[in-house]
Image (cartoon, rainbow, N blue to C red; front, side, top):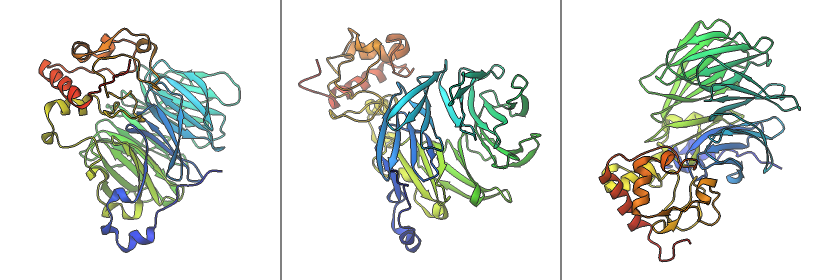
Length: 435
């Protein structure tokens, strides 16, 4: 049996909203990395996709972890029967039935969005490999659509499943007729990458958000402009729609959530949900009373929509890893910027995407118990010391240990690399490093 998350006491909040910090309202804690995707089932259950390589399925405030991806999970969607579909940086598309997953297939690039057809027969996926995957849930063959020369950021079905709308990294929104998919209609030519789409339940209007901050509503049939809510905040990263309350939520890279009335196309509210960093994921509760938001922090926040403009931004709390840079040494700054999202410094297990760095100096690569390493590191002869850590960040992981799970990044200045190493030596010393 599954339980909806439920509201915290809205009566209490209505009486004294100023007495509580926003993070004391409804929060889902447990992920070990940023939140990249969210979906809410019809019964109120929440699913989350995280940089920590996992899907979280929340029973009340307690998570059930679905582990099967080999890299960050970017997107998750419920089927009507409670199963889940997810996609990630490992190029994989997985179908979950409880804690058991089945690999629907793989793209040749990151999977950025998944959506389920209205009749529950198909899963459509958007990938940076330049294709839209169409995966049958009824035993049929997989197919693909190939928009012209661009990665795909988002994909949505029309209410009757007869069309698919596709957002590309080169700023196009295309409409495909499923009966004739070889000739897409260019609905929008925005000029900057389009990240996210929302199609109304009627199929009459389509909202999109873009890299340059473009936030626009167009006629879903003709592409004619209906409304423009572009502000000086970019990029637009996520949207969610609550049709019963005519609410459209829009999240951006500055940490704001704007809400728009879809009946009269007027802004209802504009709320700064985080003090630092983007909001990557949004979803409304079934009754529209809450909007769930996730981003650079590893916590999912559920904001009471009626009170959003009265609340304190979430990331004022001390637990965030994004502290004021002036409070940190240069070595700690390098760790926070380059390592902290994936790695903990403590010896205990965590849900972060990478293994703990406790005792890393003198440790053979690929040897932390319980961590699922790539083949590259599990059989590596590398020993992490000042020289190898310096080379790792000087060359970049993609060159120093090609094939590992580590993201592509470098630290260009030798002084910065040495300061990071000195910080790791001071913070991760272990008398008994892993052998």
